[in-house]
Image 1 (cartoon, helix red, strand yellow):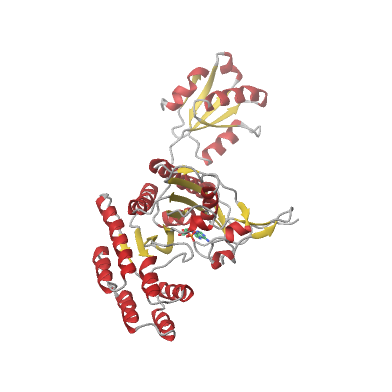
Image 2 (tube, rainbow, N blue to C red):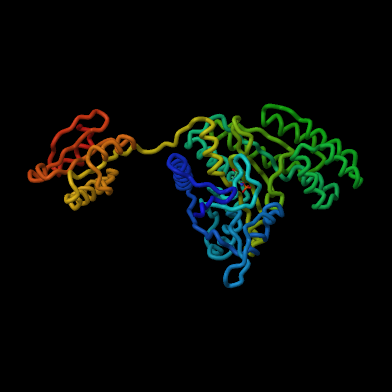
Length: 432
Ligand code: AMP
């Protein structure tokens, strides 16, 4: 007989894990509601051309791409942003700005699986579209903080950067975009000497090299001290100074929101160079060295999908990684306690009555499992004990004649006979 195995990089979520994933998704949805983000549901399968329009080469080469039966080149979405941009540039083209959009679901990347990196993973994604104001950047940081706080995570920190600082220094030095990207990627990986050597090889000014070196050597704890020092180092690069002013304003807004958020600034941090044009960030906890989510400002993206030039800022939270973080910090999902009941007939002829009573109880929001294997009472009760069920209802002919059943508390072993119409009240009020 063939034994089918799950595909590499894919997982089945059972019991606790499925509950945790859903509880994070529910919190993400609640946060979307609290901040006024409307949920949109877009397809998992999109056209390859759309998904590859502005995705970085790294993601593009790892897409699950195939031809459908109609010969169209399609792919499983590796991120939400392309789908959101498509909707904004078409269906929502004439809707008043700002747009606040939320999506949650699974994404697919043919990455090499490792700790916290899967081929199928889940994100909650928020996009604030139509404004370039720092309040919008601050809102995305605050809603991310709210989600992590509600999930129950502790000691998480925001790593903040701004694509504009190094990009504008290099632009003013007439460095081509391709070289800029290479330099920024090397600096992000902390391969500073390679970055400097590359710049030297194309004859960049000594002043520029020493400015970049000062940025990378900077080590201060206070985020505002860091930023003001960077501001001094880059003062001859007027657009980089604008980037510093922008990030200072965003972070001041966070401080003034009176939320205590752990922030640190890293001038050489980059992510999604094809996308981001301003503030960027990622979130970490001390226990694991992988980002739980990340985002930033992307002011050029919507027009690349055929929309009007539109400023936007957004974030994607890795639901799988938030679950991993919760497991590391031993945080259990917050779920509503619900009383559970099994309902067992004395003999199989009473199955109709069992179904009828079960349906009545479920309509009062009790979670009811009816006996469906024709087991003897003792066997069915043993099974209920194993499953940690709170109560059993035993349906017998003698009691039914009096319109009653036996009700048993499986924890205390107390049992009594009660009228059918009183079952729900007795269980919900914990009267047994
Ligand atoms: P990105 O869409 O690459 O900007 O990633 C945003 C967040 O999604 C990351 O910070 C991770 O939390 C999560 N993420 C990205 N790729 C994966 C993956 N292969 N497996 C699990 N989570 C991922």
